[in-house]
Picture: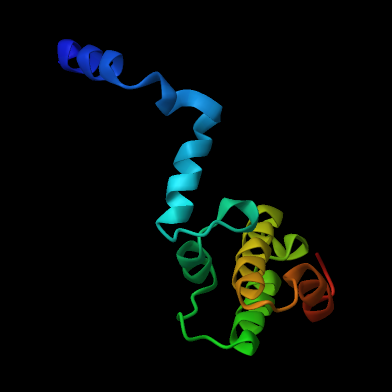
Length: 112
C-alpha cells in the first residue's frame, strides 16, 4: 500500500503542483465547469436553491427570498446558510447577465 502511494507520488510531474493548482482550475474551465462566486458551480447553485436548469430569473429570485427568510438568524437561522443562498443566486443570475442577489436579496427580505 505504501509502495503504491510512494510510486504514484514520486512519479507525478512537479508541474502538477505549480501555481497552486491554477492549471487544474484552467482545465476545469476548459471542461465547461464554471465556478462563480464562493467557488460554486452552476449545478451546485441550482441544488442549493432547488431550481431547475430551466428556471426563470423570477423563480431564482423567489427561491432566494424564501430561503433567506427561512434562515433568518433572528429566527434561529444561519447567517452562513444565508450567504450560501446568496452566492448561489449570484452564480445563477450572473451567468444570465442578470442582477446580483446582494441587491435583490436585501430588497426582497429586508435583511442580509
